[in-house]
Image (cartoon, rainbow, N blue to C red; front, side):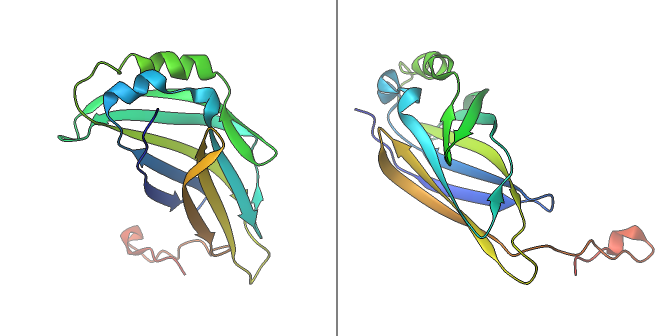
Length: 164
């Protein structure tokens, strides 16, 4: 059985690409049981629109005790009916299983980027991402979108730019 603990981090860029990183820290031996076809992320937009149907996710493995990176690999994902899945789960499994003999706990970072459209002018929106494994939720993160921002106003020299 795969034991999962979750740490979350999210960012939103001015181009409205939302980046979400979920971090897990199981014993490396649990990686032998990881099945990427059972991993998913449910995307729940509130007053925003998801603008893409997939992309590339990055998986990063680190030594939990030292934070030393053990490996990093990108894998394609698709979004169908608001749920993101790996599109080639057997490749993810092969990569993850290769680290199952590592001694100690590993940190698993899963990062994917999702494009969204702004909420209507004067309104806010949120994208909630719920990570699931074998259809059981194990963590959730909500990312606010405060709507359109004005471009920076720059006065000479250009280093004095301020977002309004």
